[in-house]
Length: 230
Image (cartoon, helix red, strand yellow):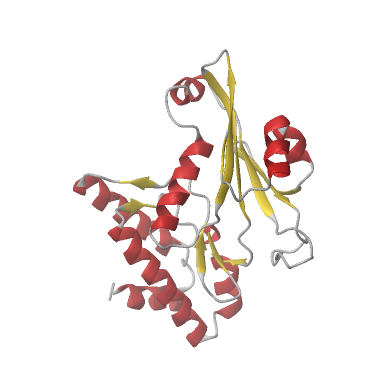
């Protein structure tokens, strides 16, 4: 287990002692084959916030599920997916980008070597997905231009950091109350040392992002212009 000093000791102990019990106590956000995600604490809405003397700010606990034997064998000698996302979040935060603060990660091992499941605890990014935001503001040109400018700044910074995001679905960006964009779901993110691989991943990322706006030509045009794509 690794954890940030800002994580309350009681929460760290609960995660270490029985992560499955902690997971079961949360509100389900996603229950898939690859991972299970719950919200801990906060209100039932996406806008959960901490307040002085009020309820604890919401957290997110993600369990990366065990998969086939080959995946288990490969990850026995690599970082777990939770640890990988922990490191990726630190890259983004150190680079000045917004992503939920990683607070703890736990690897479950058997026989001292085989890594079975892993758990990642982060802060909760309150807001709407970029897909939801665009859907609610398609007729508002200024709002679209503003969020496109926000994305363009992120896109340029990712390039400076030599980061390939790997999964540019609009649902992987959260728009908060200040209309800032947060990056979530960092499983596919990589930092590239070689130019050709990085350039290929950038092309793939851009194509993936623009596919979000198929059937929305006016929205796609706003992003193309802000990104300098003509």
